[in-house]
Structure formats: structure tokens, C-alpha cells
Image (cartoon, rainbow, N blue to C red):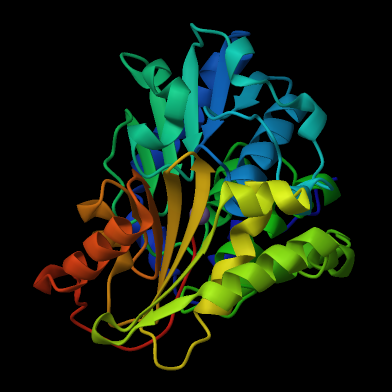
Length: 362
Ligand SMILES: [Mn+2]
């Protein structure tokens, strides 16, 4: 199929999207040349997304992996966290059977491409593979540390999937229905189903191009957003029952313990949406959701309505993310965890200059 109208159409009458101006053409050319040279020489291209992947990380990883395979290039797709498990809401994604567990990833790839990872740390147990090796970083986190050798990084891109589509198009790849499904998952999850402030015209246009490829978007949305086990509802009930509101910090906090997950047979990967319930609280500027991933170990998600830069807040606590959506990990008693977040919320540098529009995306 060659009738796919990709970025050419975007470059027509309308002005370039902001994200297109963030990445110089030379950087795109360099990325394309490196991938082509490695692929054509039969070299192994290692694709890595961030640990504990969300929809954008997973969708971008699979789309690029499938695309390179169709171009006749050898690629390996993985991420550096265990258990190496795909969250149940994404099990319809094409290409999942081609993923390689971190222990089986080749230790000496010719080229690495990272997707949706804002820093080397986010590559988890596979982070060392980017050291001293050509690495193309594809990402949209404002906090990106530019840890590679080629950087396709644009903070104003709604999702890494937006940049991945551009890369596939520049490689001369065709976006067929499978690739479109992967990219759509990235786009729809990181824009909060086209509701967050990062939803711009180019995100809507990408959505429309992907629909043109015949994806089953309603069935995909049902599995991603509207399908839960009964146990998940019970965990949600426990979480809501004990959620607390801290008025002086305009913070609402909910948490799920390992005990909750064991009691109802729910995996921690299924809890991605719980924070969306917390962020609906009218009097809370910041929503915080803590998930226990080991005894006393918490994976914390943060969302802001606009006045607080939770990306900066998370950086203070060893994590990162976007201004409206971020996270960090910590091993602390829960009350100390909340106390530290409340403390950082008092720092001046986490208050945004232009308080206003709600956003999102990770
Ligand atoms: Mn993302």
C-alpha cells in the first residue's frame, strides 16, 4: 500500500505544527540514515521503551518494530522492567508476540532507538545498553535529558506516537492497519482521549489518518477504557473509600496496597486509570495516586490541573514527566510519602507561570 498520506499532507497549506519546528531536519536525516545504514547492513537495531510501559510507550515501540520488520531490517523490541507483562487493556495490540524479554535482549546491538523515555534511568535494567553506542532518542518529555547521540525530541508533540509516525514515514514505511492501531493507542492514551491541553490540530489530524487505515477504534477504546474485572471495581472502591484530601496543599491522594491487589486478583498494571477518578475532585489542584509495588515500595502518579508543574514536583522526588502528568517511585511509609509531596508543593519552582489549561500525557 502506498496511498498513505503522511506528513506531506500536514506540510501543505497549513503552518507547521509546533512540534515540527522543535526538531531540525538534519536530526531527522541523521536518524533515518543511521537506521537505514544499520538495517541494510543486517545489523541489529534494539528498540527500547520506558519501564512499566504505558499506551504511548508500548504503541510507539510496537509500531516502529513492525515497521522495521516490513522494511526487511532486524530489530528487537523490549523494556527493562519485570515482570515483563503487558497491561491487560493493551493485549489486542499487534506484534506483542514479537517482544523480547529483557534477559534475552542482545547485549551488543549496532544501534539503539529509545521511545517515550525522558532519561536513561527510565530504561530500567537495560539502561546500560545505550552507553557508548549510537542511540536515537524519540520522546516528547520537556524534561528529556538528551542521553543519546541523535535526538528526535519535541515537548510540544502530544505523544511519542506522533514522532514515531513521522519517523516511519521518513523511513519510507507504510502505515497499515496494524501500525495504525499501535500509533492510535499511543495517541489516544497520551491525549486523555483527545481531552488534554496537548491535543492540538496535528494530534487530531493523526487520529483521522489512522482511522482512515481501518482501525477498529471503538473496540480498542472499549478494551482500553471501559473493560475491567469485577476485582478492579472492588479495588477502586477501597481506594475511593480511604482517599484523603489535604486542603492546604490542594492535594487529593488515593492508594492501593499489595494486600488489595492480592485480595481481588488484580495486577498493578491495571490501575493506570484510577488517577483519572481522583483528578475529577473540584477543589484539588493536584491528584496523587500511590500503588504499592513491593513491601513499602510505592509507584506514584501525579496529575495537575495547570497551576502546578507536577513534572518538576516529580523531579524533586527522583522522578519526572510532563507539567500535567508525572510520576516517581519511593520506598517510604505512606504518611512520609505524602508529607514529602506536600512539602515540595510549597516550593515556588513547582508553580507554573501560566496557570490555566488542564493537560496531560505521559
Ligand atoms: Mn508519552
